[in-house]
Length: 444
Image 1: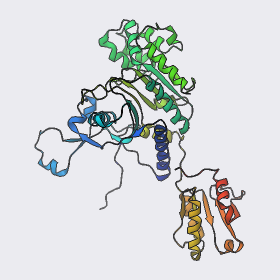
Image 2: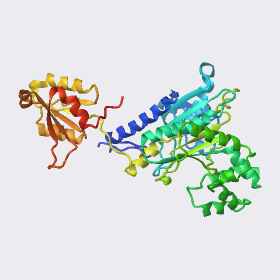
Image 3: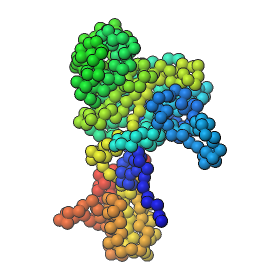
Image 4: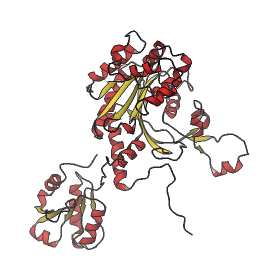
């Protein structure tokens, strides 16, 4: 009996038009990274377990997928311990291992980008994936890293999300040292800082009353939240507080790089839940869809690879959770399906096969072009082209050859009262196709 085909839970499997749109998004992100001088790095999907889990524990370790061959599994004794290999659960730990291992071969500051899948044993639910793409950039320094790199990060985010054109967005920046200084100024004990920062990170995502209720044992909690969310919060602070000057320098540096103030704002309520952030932190939101949550986040950390090397390697970086972002935008119908093939040359007459090859070769100078291969009736060929969502069809049979013309059919026009065919001289074909496709050429 045949096995029912089905995808495992927690993965995003797309049909070709959506897969093309997803690939275009990744390509745009990749181009944006490279425009700012970042170089690509790829690490294996799996790492040695002792290396991968050096820094982990608790919930992270419960979400790790281990890798083991059937032969190794058969030899394993009960209670023997963890398998030798495990799938990466983010791109940060593999980066730390990579930089520590290749430290003497890299040029610092090391500017790397990485666009790869990661794996987590998430509970199966909407918006949570077990396999998903992350798109990361990091600048790693040796011993020190100037704040100019922190200012550059929002400029990179701004460039990429402007080109992606998902709508208006805002990049919020803050500073973890300043945030902790504010907690101290509000008489919050150091042992409470982690829990309070965790609750601050929920501002804008949960009702403030719920957060205040959970902070009932924290003195001045309401006054703290009111300050952090006030429009003039920075102006209310003492400039001598630790982190104040650095935050101001980063913000002013970002504006100097051409990011408009309308798209980049200081927000003292941005906390970033991960403990290894020690300086600037970033979160980015779509203005019209705040419930999506942060679509790009990150920050500065003091020492990336402290578990693998004695060298001090401070860094700053951001990550885009591409799979989750794309899936949410797809659900909201903010993603447009795309076609890989822009033009199809139909096989109107088998005797003109060489001419069809010539036409396709000419058009491929600018577009993705397919030649229909079978001697089917034109109706069937057009039905295929429509199903494949190809915008334009080229028809060249004996009638067109006798007149020295080529017929171009716009398959996007479905209104029977609107003409969708035109005949042009062979020498004018490129210009006609360019006119119909709005001057859009195939992505390089």
